[in-house]
Image (cartoon, rainbow, N blue to C red; front, top):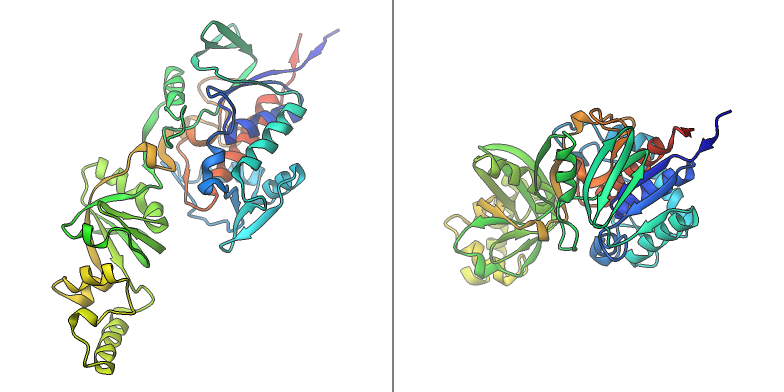
Length: 399
């Protein structure tokens, strides 16, 4: 007669996707060990959303996720949807507050709350959380997965790599997961910063540095419009930041890496067509003919921005399409996420199991899936962690 033993699942990485994977695997009967290289799990969760944690978004946008295999993300979000995510966190005690028309935050206003309830749930389910565990090697030997750390080797029937990307200044965001995946035969699409500011070529940045203003950012790659977003722009002494620029940055950065010409056009009155703007400026001049050039934009734009615009050869053109050549971008430490990662064409989208190594699963940022600002990257972490966790635990071990 066969005895039924719990399947042993080892999870590498105690961030958002790793904690979710641990909970899902434990709920489905697995004996779970989670290995985190920091002194405690969930450190990156604690700094998301400026410390407030925009943990999902109820606006399910078709273009919210990007990658070389653009439809890969859909299956995971079908299996663990936004609605399921909200219900999950509500059950754990997170009361969601809807801000900015769909952005969900914990009512506590503290990102640490999200990390804390995940850790409490994991421990309640019997997950063994091992901290200060820097994984050096992952390999398979006679159907047993072995995970080497300094001075010890963990053994399991399945392993989930959920150790994140190189983005963030949080210690441990070192990209070590890419090396582990590559050593197991997986192709890595070069990780590059995403959701970050862009550096541009211009001589007038010192004049507008510190200005925040509404506008539209349009990204052109080799003359072709590639992405466009509207919202609050943050003008800096090196270029442009703010959510609209974050949203388009991944396309510009990858294009720069490929040696392409990247232009960022800023529209400081996007609610007007070019014809409407022309009429508006004429009317503005007719209404107050006594105003000199310096005073013409008073009340329309912040003073520092107005001075830069008035210095342009064509004021109307500068307002409608202030053109900047993109020359660089902020580092991984300043980026919220990365584009690139483990090539998803070698991963089963239904289970997130490796097509090359049975019993090896992936979750979260390590995969070549990156989302827009607004809770989408955390939703990917929850959905992919859940799918990897339940599938890693699905089959019990027979002895």
